[in-house]
Image: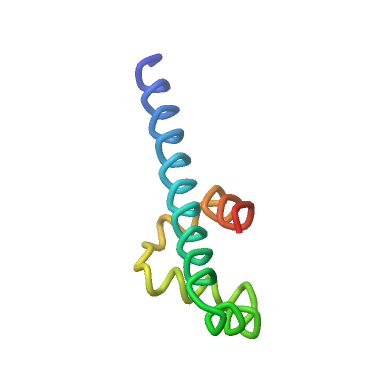
Length: 80
C-alpha cells in the first residue's frame, strides 16, 4: 500500500511541476511578444490580460489537461 501512495504523490508532484512550467512558458511567450515591438505592446494593452492569455494558449496549442490545473494559472499570473 505504501508504494502505491508514494507513486500517487510522485505523479501529482510531477503534474504540478509540468503545469507550472507550462504556465511559465506561456507567460514568457507573452512577455517576449510584448517586448518585440511597440505595436504588439499597445495591442496587448487594448485586448486585456484575459484575451491575451486565451490567444497565447490557443496559438501555443496548450492542451486542456494543462490549462485545467490551478498551478498553470497561478504561475501564468505570477510571472506576467
